[in-house]
Image (cartoon, rainbow, N blue to C red; front, top):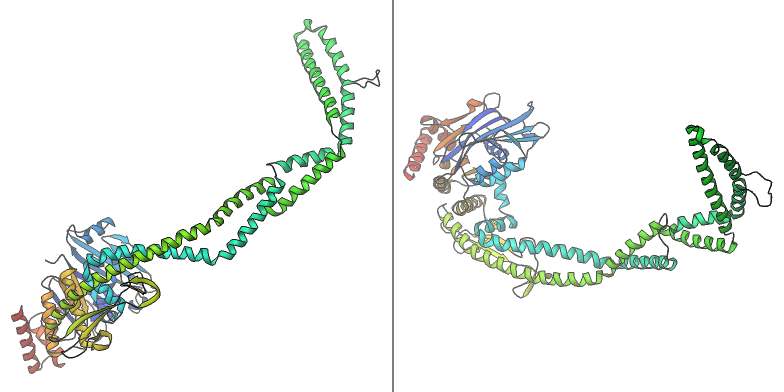
Length: 580
């Protein structure tokens, strides 16, 4: 059962297409037309809808932007349906509307179900909705990394589970190795830093500064440096307030205030206001007495000892030597000492850390070797089944004697991890190099498909791989662009037949130049240009009856009205219908 169907695409100002609507249906749809008519724009448009890279060169000359809109029916509860709803997209009776706009400056915008979304979200949906294959995919299949990915995809959980464990251990090993390298390669710098910190801590410890000590000593030095002037000022002030014993006749502030207080006290009972003033003058007298007493004590206690001043200045010099190196003041120096002590503990602990990291690294390498062996075993088992399935498919694609196999190997590396009793190189996906081999006929040695497959054979191998995937990891829609490249004759008929078979369980859209393939389609679309070289709404149409025979005749002989070509076209259609 087809889980979703790409129902329609509207394409505006994209390449040679001015404004056209491509109506699709379940089953097998073939898109045909003259070379350069714009058939490939159908593939490009779908690629944009599925989050493909935007390119300003795609925008039709003279247009501000290119717009592709698509309508896809989505099964309720499917992964695509749930992801779209999470993004806030609205479905119209089970139909999801997708649009992509590319400006002439190369900027791109995407909308899903009426909501603006990141382009990356369209790519996420593509994994569950559509598999797009073109010439670049065939070339991609020649890369060893893509061949390994194809095998892993086919293997499913059997590889995915150990691969996830391996990837976690690999990332941890990379992190441990990086930290270990940083610690060991910086050993000299760390030793120099530790020596510098120890010297500073020893120097600070030798002085033993106290918090705020520099401020206290500065004040004391200022006082000791002006002791005579301070004592003289205190003595004069005291005499002014309390009198001078050497001058009994002198007038002082305390005596004057006391006289004023006595005068008012004598009459305060006659006026409350004057009594209040008497009370205030009495308070002044008490205050003058307190200040006079403190002045007397200050003068007596003031230490004018030059030895003490010298000791203070010596201590201040020692503290200044620290603040020049380690902080703006003594408090900052003490903060520096605290931080340095913590950093020194950290540096001194690096030796222990090196031992811990080394042990963890060795344990991880051993664990990684075991996980890599499990990966190799899982891939080897899956490779046999995958190769057998692809070989069986090739038999139905006019390659009955071809044999596909996988070469799974490792490269020895003294710095690698141990697998199977020998050290081998490793990477984020394991230790295996996976290569797809093809023996096109009996007696031919298996060779890498990059070297041993012709263009037509490569096309069929790719189709066979995709058909095998359709049975194990299906997507609802497959779009093939020139999957029949380099193929002709009987092989083309077999490709058409196999695509028709695939279309019984999925929607298949094929851009093709081969009539043998197009004849097997349930529906054939013709893309044709107008006289001005553009494709308009009328330029994409469904071919039926006589029109389809004419198009197949053109594809066969380049002549729509050739009787021989018409007869061949009718024969192809009859063969396809008989197969169906």
